[in-house]
Length: 79
Image (cartoon, rainbow, N blue to C red):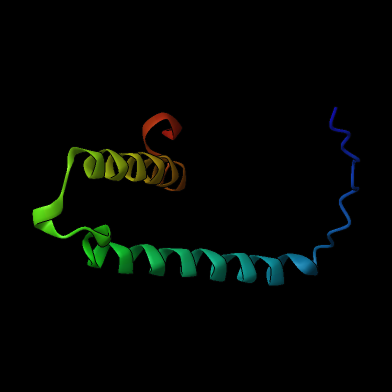
């Protein structure tokens, strides 16, 4: 059995801007890494692509679509 303790939210409004900038930098780093991986065809040479590689890429696309739908209020998140 996992016991979780509730940690009270001790964030202050003064911490929010710094935390936001820190989280944005984290996202920017992830996006840059993804772009670099995409530029390298996700590490697969064109003549070595298999259906498995396509399945992996489809999964990545599905996850990214969920994020972009939320960010741009599209798909199931449309208003």
